[in-house]
Length: 152
Length: 345
Image (tube, rainbow over all chains, first blue to last red; front, side, top):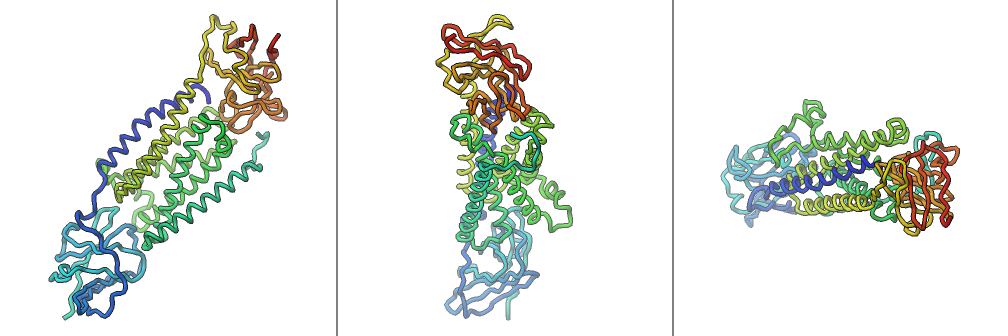
């Protein structure tokens, strides 16, 4: 390498050796905490059966039904008939319309086409209303919302 | 070396290099897919492709950037340098797949042109956590495209080695953009601690190797002083130069390699005409000074490539007195025959 380029190469790396750690430190200091503090996502739990349908919702590409079994165990069964266009998104449940993500209860990741069952704890299952939200973690926005209509 | 242009010059070493490269790429993609499907069975095929190609291209870029300094620090890594351009072009193609799937996945379903959407869907430039990181990846890909498109020797000859090398040194800027693309992108959105650790290790490895090679190069740049422009300058003792190897000195901005061979010494310019490789770090093979980077060859007495090749470098007068080597830093026109200094006479 000619001397001029070799010197340019040397100064470039001295500069990068300073700038890259600064960028790293800024990014690390601003890294996100848990999506919803103190909450862990409930894993999709398959194999629930013989429950009574309590409420349901239908939309283009998916539908969801809330079931409760005789022993009190409740779960939401969601069927996605189209693949999600949001690769990193979460389904969460809230007791009212227009709730912020932090007010809701995350129930599981939105996956590709298929049927998913998400277990609910007894407290969540006893809410007077059920509103389902889809939250996009990349764009940080709720992109779909619907109310589960109770059966009478 | 070649006297004609060919789309790709294949030889046994390059075929072997490419077979190993493609084998390792295939192995990585299989292992990555298996790992993802095992621990994230819900992952969609599009997301799997985006992540597999992203991690593979970024890993390859780290390896590519480490090859140069590794070769300067230890000659045993030189075989990796020989076909680095194929590695670079392959890395660009893998990065292109990542970019294409990402743009389709995140930008192709709206009513805005997907490329326009890359620049307009997020304009939070004042935010670190929500910085429009895709723009950084776009410009890095543009640089990698320019490098891949001009990687052939046709462009090297027509742009001149100096401009070509300057253009290809933009890979360091592309690397910085891609580091920030990852730091402000996936690591901000998902915050994997392991991601920060892996990226930190990669950054430290690449930076420290380049700095170590730069320090070693600086130390090797011996700059003996002469009295006037035309006099001989003492360089070293004869026995300090190994047989078929060179001593490199910089005298009045002349980068000179003094080779010892067959009981003689000859001095030529240290910069290879192909890609400005360091001839003085090569050795004499079959009577020819052989560039350590890509094997370009020159005769020691006249700095000319053996026929039918036409490359030429400048030559210098060299002499030996009382076991000491002296060189005159005034260059002769490229390809000028100068008598070798006979050791012991």
